[in-house]
Image (tube, rainbow, N blue to C red; front, top):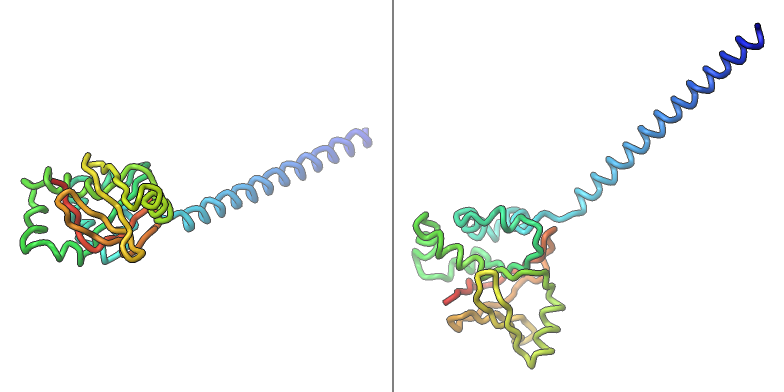
Length: 192
């Protein structure tokens, strides 16, 4: 009987140790998953809207995106390439243009202007330059708005020519976002 009691106690001890080991293993595994998740959160850039909202140079663009109701769209899966006008770019427009576009009754026009700056797909600067070179120095891209923008190279800079013939220069290429890429431009481009 003493042997049976010893055997039962030993079995209970082994079982308790095994359970404790499983609990510790589960706790370690959970901690490792949390650390990996936290690391991914730190390393993953925000969406296009998040990147723009985090940079004071794009405050006018962010206000316009909000007024047009495009926050959810540009925070979506994508990928998108956005030619993003800086505040200085919006400042080049005739006086009162930005204020007029931000009015509720101008939402359709504002949406058209903003989506004219967006191309479906992720096109980093190297791919854009390569496409321009492979197409005899000029590459047309279709925008989400439906119009086209012509991309060229001038003095090593990527230039955009809009539907009206006006030009804009990419001043900061390849700003990473989780759902695409942003290229900051120095002038607002306009659809017809």
